[in-house]
Length: 290
Image (cartoon, rainbow, N blue to C red; front, side, top):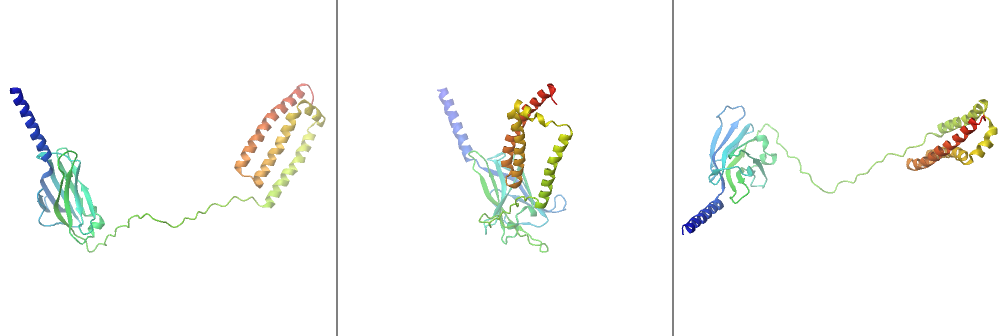
């Protein structure tokens, strides 16, 4: 029987706790609003006390050099707590435009907010109607969020200062066509320069042949060279002329992607056949043939 009474008391206490938790809501206490001019001393300016049950009866005036400061303690039910969201919402009822200013909140629920004239968007500053300021506190859980008007806000304008014109918003749509201008293809040098350098290269061939003969070249070994390694000598000299032909094609019509593969193939043939041809020449030198 005593156990049954204890169980009933525990269930009743749990139900009361759940009902109290379900009925809890976010709110605030010890809230003060101060409007202070720039350069004024501590404690100067107008000060108002905010209530979570009703808004201020008279509008708050914010001048061009003033700062608005709100200090309060946020509560969840009767306990000071830190919500996930806490900000001041400033709205123009005529246009529906609004902006929000978040509070700096500590773990003990102490919250502070300070805004100046320049922090308010130009769209709201230029409004001809009184702005509505509301406090919003909310968080995860079953506690009901708090959203209630706190005061009306009149923003004073400096008549001597130019009116701030907000920038036009970015609009996505059809844009004018973009006409790309590509670089012109590289051109060959003038024909006169080409002819001069070609003649210089061709003139060097008989000059080299004459120097070769004057140094004691023995043309009688041509038959022996072709007999010892005919394929290597033919491919070696043929690849040299083929490489010259590739350079000519690159100059006249080919591009770099056509030239490089052909040059790689011919260069490989030149290397392999040249190695075998030089081996044959070395064998003749070692045999005493000059």
